[in-house]
Image 1 (cartoon, rainbow, N blue to C red):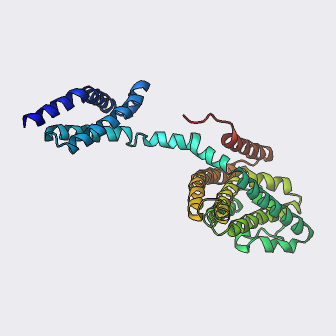
Image 2 (tube, rainbow, N blue to C red; image 1 turned 120 degrees about the horizontal axis):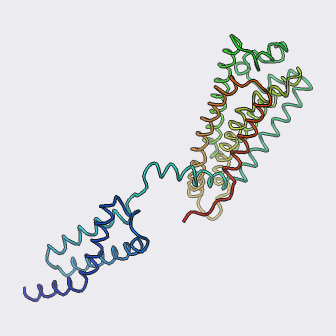
Length: 332
């Protein structure tokens, strides 16, 4: 019994200074509200002391030292674990990190897919524009009648102009049409992302469909001499909304591409990695759609000057591009 007591005394004497130091740092961190308020050298010291305490606890258990010492070390290690490995990021900080670093980084990583998504959409829009200008009957091949809401080749030039500028009953109908169009585009964005794992094909088809619809609408208004006016009406929110769809398509394409060409990884691992990056980008797409909804619901209805509409469209596009692709310092 005396020998065991001597072993316990020596064991404590050799290591107690490190335990006390760890306990001091833990008390400081707990009193200050977390490890963020420790000095840099103290933050570096904490994991070393924690591992030493774990080693001491393991030895104390293996040689059956007195239970009070074992209980003390268990409590000390438990407290240190939550400081060293516990979640220390508050919700506001996590949200700030998403907008400052995570979302732009995810979009930058998808630059190839974004380029492909844009090319598919732009090519479809150009093809639809050319076909509808040559033969207005092509309009119905690209735009569903329920979405057109009477804005088709049979509409008069005045009714199309009223769509762009007038107040009153026409404006109320326009608000309904704008809501319907926004809902349609939001669905396109979500499906383009969600169906990407099916080897990219549904995502590509949705991008082509949406681009074709846009080109057909512009061609219809251009055929009545309202192309510039329609462009401003569409792009005051479309610069944000169409960009969101392109990014959603890029997120879907990245998942589909990883499934088709996983490289040295398994398809499941490749798809999971691409999915995490794409999901981050897609969370931001929801924010873009919200911004587009505000521009569509208010800005397009209240602002009727073509130059102002185009200025907002160009300004918002430049702002998004700068936000996503402006060089940032790597996080430390």
